[in-house]
Image (cartoon, rainbow, N blue to C red):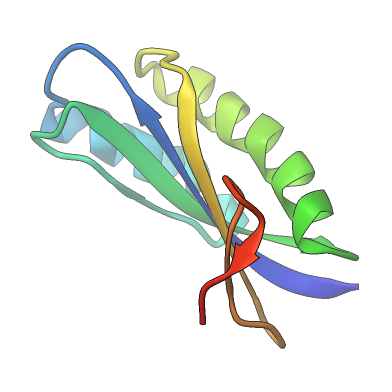
Length: 101
């Protein structure tokens, strides 16, 4: 198994407040995570998971992201993007499955 960094983005209908992104950052911190989105009509997080493949990494990361969203109390907006970087791999865009770098 390899470590994978999965970046997940959710988009919604209003700008995110600083306090909301701080709460999301706190919720993803145990997953070696960071959060972003202050002032944006979206929020996101980058978390680390162990998985056998990039597809499995996304499958593991999305529910963890959803749990963090619930814990943080931010709006449960739909996930619109998931990108994966493996410790021994290049950058993968999960939308089309193509290797970017």
